[in-house]
Length: 115
Image (cartoon, rainbow, N blue to C red):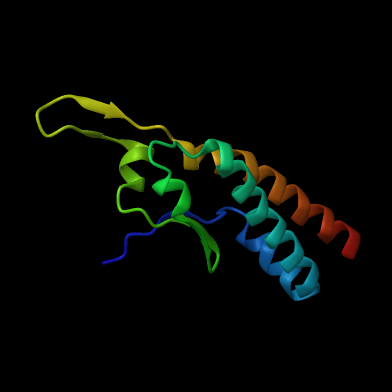
């Protein structure tokens, strides 16, 4: 069973592919910078009760993931067995919302420099 829960940066695929063809090394630098930025933001953005969620962070292929089996429940919220609801904390969405525009900006800048 796959317990990974994470994000990849969507909506920039065409830009990324274009840069990858033009300059694969520059693309890899920008991609690595984006994932490093996600990692750094997650240091403070990840909710901590025991620390297990934060320790479960990984960069896996082209995704920033949490491997803790309950990560999605912390993100989106969940109902309690005896009733009641615990709202989501949207920590992963917050990371994505910060990094995506910066990643897109870096891709566009690199493509402009390559022209």
